[in-house]
Length: 72
Image 1 (tube, rainbow, N blue to C red):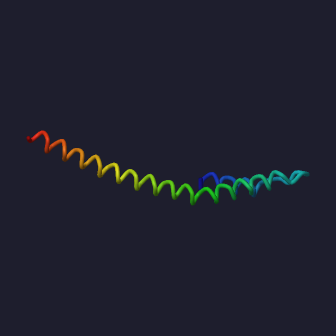
Image 2: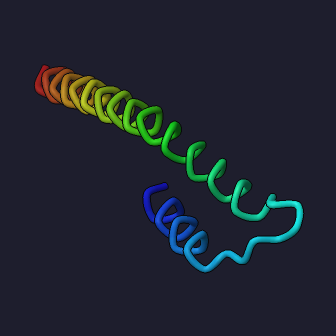
Image 3: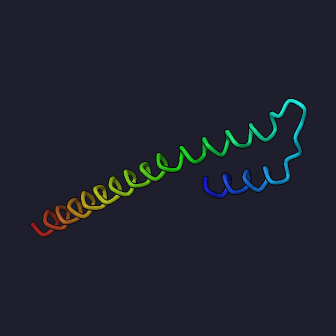
């Protein structure tokens, strides 16, 4: 996301104004959308990491149970 946003910002620097003025406005709106999406992406990453840890713990417990059952 950050990389795409940086590319759009670089493009704006070289954007030639067109009569409708939409070129620069479109890029600026895309940048704002990316900026808004970054916190949501970070939150999703944190949720994913939390879920990953939970599943690793569950797997560890299941492996322990399997070993206990194999010893019986």
